[in-house]
Length: 325
Ligand SMILES: NC(=O)c1ccc[n+]([C@@H]2O[C@H](COP(=O)([O-])OP(=O)(O)OC[C@H]3O[C@@H](n4cnc5c(N)ncnc54)[C@H](O)[C@@H]3O)[C@@H](O)[C@H]2O)c1
Ligand SMILES: [Zn+2]
Image 1 (cartoon, rainbow, N blue to C red):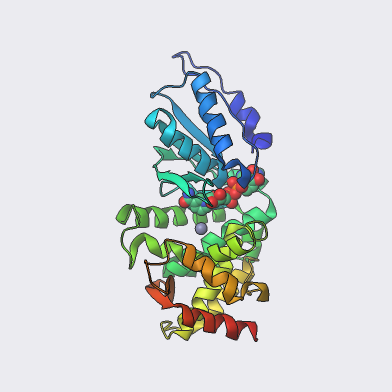
Image 2 (cartoon, protein in one colour; image 1 turned 90 degrees about the vertical axis):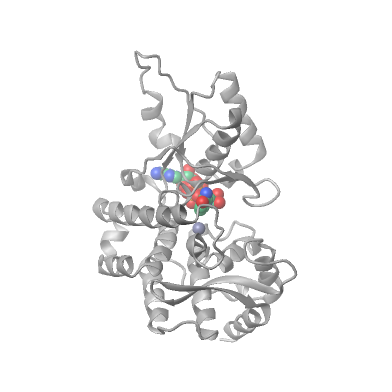
């Protein structure tokens, strides 16, 4: 984002009261969520003489937000943090909720819960975001829509053209609704301790989605694309397990993902139980010790969900039946 907005930030004048700022740029991409980049930002703060009264402002997508948040939580045992998310995914998801971290020991394995003092999300910057990254962010937006009847109705009423064209009033509405929903869930259950509801519902589409990202080496699907695929899997699993009470959701969710130009079909390469199942079981969030079950957030209808420990055998059965289609 430095190429687009760096000069505006760099040109901010020193104020008469002595307020000063410096800018540290890190390379774009997930590779910057590593220990070397974390150390380089810490070093830069130290050399610049930053102290406990200073604040770190993380301007960028989810990568910069996660990295910047982790730096702020560790430098001087914690300095103030401001998140300025610039990607749709970071606006509706990564910048809220206080999860920070880097990929040391595995994806997001090293990190902290550390809330920003404030989040500034300006949808105007989304005009420069790449098309694929924009559509990816809509994957998380679609998840929020299935979680809330009112939001689902709203988004079904917006024209495809207005979404594709990134109309500012539409983006403002999408972002603010998602932010309100996420912050509501987070305030009710900040550390994801409620195992049957609360914040865990935001993991809809993520059990299978995370496994999709992992088995494809984190370089084939963007996170929001994997979430869309994961939502389709969870929905079909819910149908198989007779948890889904409103079958029309299958058509509705598929239509929504299609309209948003997100993946809505599950590629056969993602249906091998021998690779995908161990990946879901590996995720500590999903399994309980010594338990051959995987936790899924399963829809009953729009806005109504169950959190279930699903038998590995039931998951395998669905994977096999989908691969035969
Ligand atoms: N902390 C959380 O709760 C949470 C939640 C979801 C995802 N994440 C993390 O977020 C990361 C993914 O975030 P992302 O999808 O934003 O990816 P990203 O940060 O890599 O941004 C995607 C690309 O878009 C560019 N970009 C961002 N804003 C732009 C703008 N306005 N104009 C032009 N280019 C712009 C970035 O430089 C980058 O190249 C992952 O590391 C994921 O683990 C964290
Ligand atoms: Zn997500």
